[in-house]
Amino acid sequence: MKSPIVAIGSIFIECNHFGGVAADRETFRRTQLDYGDAVLRYDSGTVGGMLQTLRKRRAETRPLLVASACPSRLVTRECYRSLKEDLLARLHDSRPVDGVLLALHGAAAAEDVGDLEGDLLESVRSLVGSGVPIVATLDLHAHVTQRMVSSADALIAWETYPHQDAWNTGVRGANTLLDVIDGRLRPAMVMAKAPVLVSGVNGHTAGPGPFADVMGLAKSFEHREGVYSTSAFLVHPYLDLPEMGGGGLVITNDDPTRAEELAREIARLYWQKRFELEPPVHSAVDAIRRGLKIDGLVVLVETSDCCGGGAAGDSVWTLKSLLTEAKDSVAWVPVVDPAAADACHLAGEGREITIDLGHRLDPPWGSPVRIAGQIVSLSDGKFQFRGGIWDGVAGNMGRTAVVRIGPIHVVIASHGTYEWCGEQFESVGLDIGRTKFVVAKNPMNYRMAYGNVAQAMYVLDTPGPTPPTLKHVKYRNVQRPYFPQDQDIPDWEPSILS
Image (tube, rainbow, N blue to C red):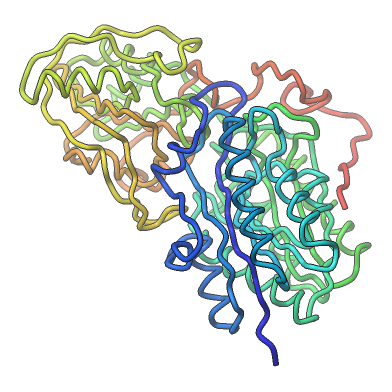
């Protein structure tokens, strides 16, 4: 029996319409940008899981390119055009192929293309034709569009948040494609959406919780006869595009009616959970004052400046509050400010320095703060992720400095990086057992990093492009009605993509 020929590639990034720093080719080079045979060496993450499965099932692999990066503002027009052209050119030269396997995010956007994944999948479909199956894996924060559903034979999403199943999702994606090629699966795919736009703060999938309930319902359907795969989506809410919303996607074996019925059930539960998905928030001052009354570590969650959601990471809102409310308490604060990092490296380790810090990459969200402190360490900012999306991959903060202002330690990086499990703080020698406050700039992974040791965790309501609630975000392209702007929608029914 002839081995199936599979083309494999990836353009993976999450984007933000409200702030952050645009992504160019250098942004991808700092994380992953590989071509051809270099792709075949991947042994972790979604692509690693895909490759292992293709080898086990004796498929012949035609590697295209892998480009992945920390979330950002929009991908520049030139960057997306060049990555897309590279991928399509390599796919063209790889033909004939029996299938195409793509590791995507689902919430990427370029300066001139809002629905990046839809555009890419549509272009791949035009190149290979209707008879070649295309399967793509997605983050569960994907903004699933009609173009994506129409262009792909199957979309397979991650099942965990925090994201711990990138490898397994790659395995599932590869098996799905090979099952289609082998004739075991005739996919009937339907997506049902609810207009709910919420942050990821209450979006965990393990243990009790509103989105855990939605995911649990979706995955329970996979035990039913004829149901091949289900996915639940908590859409990335920092895009400003039409048709925004989360819900459920169901793939059956040649039963579109059943797929739509079950997808609608998932979307309805997602809608019912909308109020539970909204988190309680505190001002930075209030959270710090509460924390001072508690013995032990307190996590200040400044999710509005989340590099993992596309923000620049340059906010100093919480730092300012710590300097006024807790100047005698040990604290760790991350700030992305390449000019300040350069100034520290120029001055030298051990020197005293006075600098303006913060809000220089994305200035609309605040003003810099002047700090005076001692440069306690300097580094190249390199570290290694241990788990998650980029398990084993090198992270790169660029030139980095730790400046101590009394007992407050500020980690000044040159580039924003994805916060996973405290690797950035550890790489500069900061010990979790020796601090009162830690500022975490992510909406979910802080629980994994500090949940076993923190005595309290407060979600802060500070300005930024990745806020913990979407109540006050002014969209231009998202159509009303939607939650939380509209608390109820009479006679609401899920919108269907098929």
